[in-house]
Length: 267
Image (cartoon, rainbow, N blue to C red; front, side, top):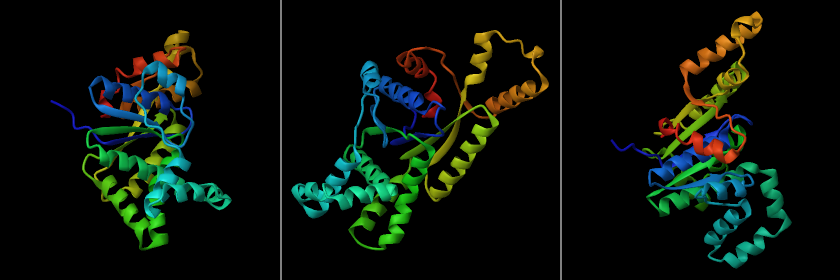
């Protein structure tokens, strides 16, 4: 049975939990299934050498370019838009109101998805705050502008996000109590911003502790009680949530390639 792929997959979570490796591995998995997929490292510098080694299909967008395209469409002139984007006012505006840039980039990605019904985008969000701000910005700016062309664009974006099988978000966490608590808080906030939609937000656990003990041949029975309790808690977390193995390799390319064989359940 062919799985029902979503159009936009978002990978987010705290720093160091494996978001980028997992997002790239998932892109490689979809590529292996002959899907028209592209990877986007949202609002961060792309790891171009790694992308090239993996032959990763990508879609690269920069805030200034996206904003210039957007303004040019509204003014029917890319020349005027280019001039506007060079002014200190607009450069400062995006620094003062990061949510505006997030919304423009998200809108650009949605434009690409609507232009090509076969396209799937895997979005690697560099931090949990970026993903949350990205969704909050559509509602916030709609309330600010009330009416007009910008509001119509925001409503179009919201209709896409609410569409059936359009959006799925994965919150990545380590198998620790603190990391899980932070991930669950983020999931709750994302779900709150995506009420009345068909969107799904799932928790995915990076099972790193198991590999550590296997690699170092540690006998759990000789550990102090507080470490035994910690390990028991982590095992309980692993048993309760969707878990992916921690790939212990020195090469990022090998990590992504090997991890791509375990991500089918994230579809």
